[in-house]
Image 1 (cartoon, rainbow, N blue to C red):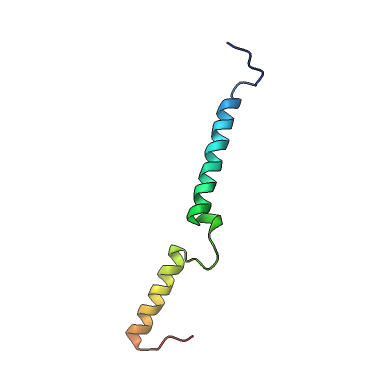
Image 2 (cartoon, rainbow, N blue to C red):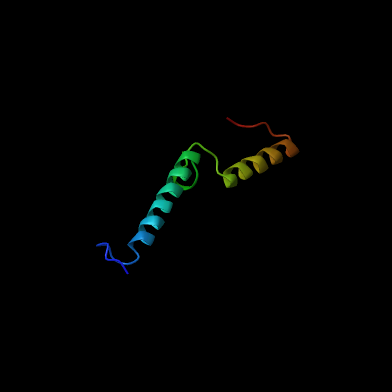
Length: 65
């Protein structure tokens, strides 16, 4: 056992912290999760808009602006 001046497990915590930082950076670059821009559609919003457009097309209502 070597005495490096750091408590046991601190290397593991640093590695986990670095992994979390990289994950957050990747999410912000991809603009997903809490880093998504408001105008960007989520899959749920896109599906809801698709269903609404399909219903309008089915019943023949024009899209309202």
